[in-house]
Amino acid sequence: MSCETFPYNACDDKSFNSNPAIQLFGNRLFIDQTSTEFLVELLLVVTSVKQADSHVFSSKLPSREVLIAWHDTVLKYAPKARLNLKLFSFLGASRLDARHAIHRQHHHELLNTLMSKISMSGSGSKEGVIRTLENLFLGFQGAGGGRTWCAQSFLPISPGLLAGETIWNETEARKTPPPNWSSLTDTLSTYFTMNKHRFLARGGEILYLQLCNALRQSSDNIKGWVKESGIGLSSDYNNNEQDPEWLHSQLEQELTGLMTRCPPTMTEIAEFIDSGIESETSEKTDMTDGSPRFVKAGWCPAESWQEGYLFAVDLLRLCKANLDTIDRLSLLESACTMHVLRSLAMQSARYTDSEHPVPWPGYRLAVSAPEEKRLAVKRISQQTAKMMEKQIFQAIRNEAKGIELPRGDREPDKSLNEADRRYAGKLFVGLAKRIGLIVPRRGAGARFVLNDQLLRLLVVTTVPVGGRITFATFKRLVELRHGLVFDADGFNRASEWLNGTGVYLPSDTDVWLQEMLEAAGLLIHLSDSCALVENPAGSDN
Image (cartoon, rainbow, N blue to C red):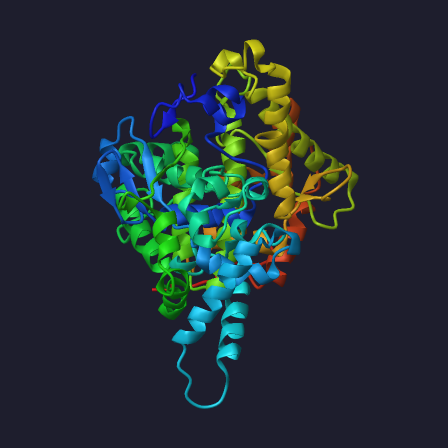
């Protein structure tokens, strides 16, 4: 097996050859990217104008015809910088030592210009309106509160708040102080860096490319995989999740609607602040020679279309559910992070040292109760956490299956250690701890658990919208889609994955899960032996 990449052959790229984890998982999944930033970057690609070869399009996804015809094609997209909006919203909440004199000066000019555009009738003051707007946009601060104002991100509640990453080059500004804001933006690449991908580190690009890769597959390919894996996607005439053409059409429609749920006034005000009161900045940051400033997206493993298809179904179900806007965004953030974990786990399973293909999904993660007291249960859960990290460790070193390790003067041990720490095993553990899938955050004894947010995500994405399934079916589907197991039989399969030996635990191992579902109002008892898991989030349509 070799590392084939999508949407183009990346084998000659410098980053591909410098890091085995990037070869295996795509360019790139990185430990410094937060859950919010995975979603922000994904939606940034979704909403931006995009280009594939000479084809420029503004739809959320490339058409099926374009996807099927893609061959060695580089995807590009044109993110907006929104420097004026970020300056207006975040300067007052940024570190004092990061507020350069030119930033403060331009901020003052923006406020004065905005104030001159405000017409008052009745009580109140223009200064009060300005403060209200500042507090409004600051309230949607998403990630990067401790960073310079331009490196922060908004919650992606509307298209007008989606912005690319911009890094302030403080050292260069000290060395060559800019005389004013106009000269600063004239030499943009000197004082601002827009291509480092430090925080929007390309993880969202990978998620988008996995969607594209999955939705270009043939219907027969999808149906064969669904039947073989048993992942239980619907095949109804009006809800045919096994048909990639239907799924593509529905996802295009729902992603379009997702960014219009917030009142359009929010986007109108944001765009007015960013470019309406002073357009020179946005023209310099967003355009190049009169055309949109396109940046190249990375690549993803070609084999990852299966998990990409599961992610597409997860997104569609979350978009269709009748949820509050902020609640939906919160679940979408968790869904992105859970999918990154699934991508790391499934891809590493394909590249283990096993001589035979592993049964789908290739790993089992034993989930214990948050307040678990039984040592045997905790021990198996802890062992699966260690084994997951070990599987990823082994996968990025598996030269027999096509992983190219650094050679010559590239210090292979140092490179591999860096891959483990920031792009591979520690990335999995770190992300799982951030969303509460692994506890404790620090110290020994790391094990898998569920919190209320993750439990709700699993229900909304596993149970049909507004529908019900049996508790046993729910556990089976979660195991097949995420590798998570809860009951005695599941722990037995996890033990076999660990060392080939089964384990026998009491039949009440999963009672805590029933109680947790019941406490959340997601479980209906029909009898002592039968219960239904209900998705209360009915269709938004």
